[in-house]
Image (tube, rainbow, N blue to C red; front, side, top):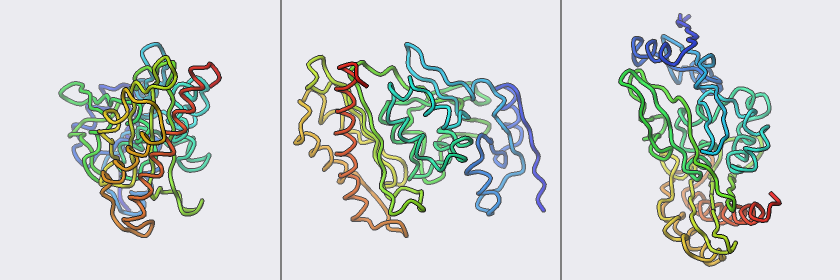
Length: 295
């Protein structure tokens, strides 16, 4: 039986110090819905576990005039139970409601979902779509990284020795904005997405012209994928079916999926386009509703 050293620091500085001293075989623990399973099945290994749920910065959930801050250890249920967050960041609400069942959602966090660095992570495309930024703390101080650059490969992130994800900051959503996350799964019992897409749209005052747009994709590349040309393709244009079809085609071309037990390459490429179009359509509906004060 393995012996694992357990720590529960009460400050960010203490957590960073423990992680830095313990080295690469130390792992932060938030909800543990991925880490504990991986350790139990010997798909991951650790000598030191650092429980970060007592660190205030990692459990902060704050919505104010500057935007939304989601601590890396905030469980999904706290996000989707907040009506203000659900209205301002609906795609984040969508994803937080989808990750596992009720029991899992009381433990799992979007920060943990991001740090697990699964290409199929449901929580990451909405964070990309909303222009999220990661706050990272380590022995050399703090730094920020855009969400779309945080994952560098399956199970791999930009975190260096002693570093941990503190929080994710989403900029303030405009009054005429909306977002949506959708995924495709072959059956309810298989909870990992074959493909997923999150879209964000902000409209001009006329309610028809797109001011900005962003799209994030899941399970169609080695990492969650930001569709870089979505904003360029839509900004300044009328929100039409033709415009959305162009972005859907761009999503199909950008997809670099693999074939596995959950889906074929052609299927995932097709789904990337379908889900991009669908989420843009719903994001548009939500943006118009927000502009009319009915969201």
